[in-house]
Amino acid sequence: MIKDLSPVRIAIFASGKGSNAREIIHFFQNGRHRVDGRKIEIALIVCNKAGAGVLNVAEESGIPWMLLEKEKFYNGTQYLEELSKRDISFIVLAGFLWKIPPGLIAAFPDRILNIHPALLPAFGGKGMYGNAVHEAVIASGAKQSGITIHYVDEQYDHGRIFFQASVHLSPEETPESLAEKIHTLEHQHFPAQIFRWVECKLSLNP
Ligand code: GRF
Image (tube, rainbow, N blue to C red; front, side, top):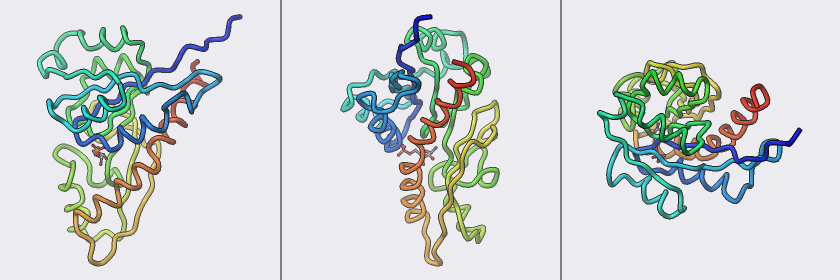
């Protein structure tokens, strides 16, 4: 039997600054991380916001990118076809705020992962993004916060949890200082957890 050595291609969906996308791209660059001899490649950046920082990250890294139109994202199969044409087999959401349509979830079963900047199931759901999350954590009097990497289902911030890591809040914590701590934690863990996830999925279903 001929061994499959085709690259494993991941799309990152992101619409913010793209600091996580940058870390992920760097982690997998030049075939540094492989599964059973297969290179893992960040093959596409998908974005819903013209001018988002993540598009500069894509340009700098020479990674193709695609801008989504809302109408087409929620109706029809054009984007599914696009992902299939580009041979994408995993999707990572890194600062992507639109709800993922059921057709996309069905086409990528257990193959879409999101990162949330708090310890779910607390502080998640619609409207819980950016500083709103950190403000709510601080207002609650919580002594710690953290990151949650989870599977994506049809509800915001709801799918099975894959990984969590936490940080302590200092008594003088502000939403801005907490955001910085959380970003550091994300950059530290997200790329390696994506690698662990891909390894684990491919060993179950090559
Ligand atoms: C991250 O904090 C992530 O948890 C959330 O969106 C933010 C994206 O930040 N889902 P960046 O664009 O990667 O800097």
